[in-house]
Image (cartoon, rainbow, N blue to C red; front, side, top):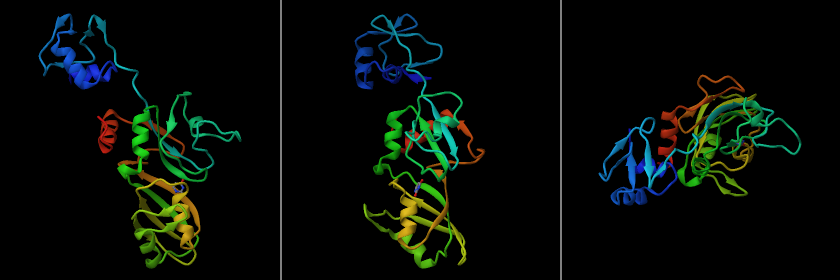
Length: 239
Ligand code: URA
């Protein structure tokens, strides 16, 4: 069930406040009956809502797909060099665009959607969505280097925001750690590591917000549930 004014707004006819005005003015009918009561609830699947005699329909359902991006694929819709793109990994030629970017060689969680509003918000630095990367380097990550990554690294486009580091394994030959950052600058993780003398040999985004790779095979994808979409929107104040 959904509040009548919210449903009218969702159909794209008016803002929620304007919809309330329409209801008050007796312009709205539910199943042929004028409704002026403000708290009225409707079932969008069953009830017929009309405003000034015009039947409303919700906008096309939007699509939200979570992809486990493999290496060797570009995060764009079209590549001038004709390399394989993330859209080539989806069955339908859906009109989706990626939320943020993973490098050609980077693997991991990538959201694709046609919901421009949500995509903009999720990538806006204001919302500080945490992104966790599994990083493998061919050198040793010392406690000192880990502390530098966590505190902030001076890059040519400015100091990085505080990050979290969780070391899994370290040796002179190679190290493995999780790095959680809240920004999404170009090649950020690689550049942060490089700045402290660490060469990244493998990079995988294991989490974006609460979304992770559980249940996905490399190159595989799934649709987000309505519950997950709602939770994502709540993270960035989108109703
Ligand atoms: N940081 C990088 O360096 N590469 C990515 O693909 C994502 C974050």
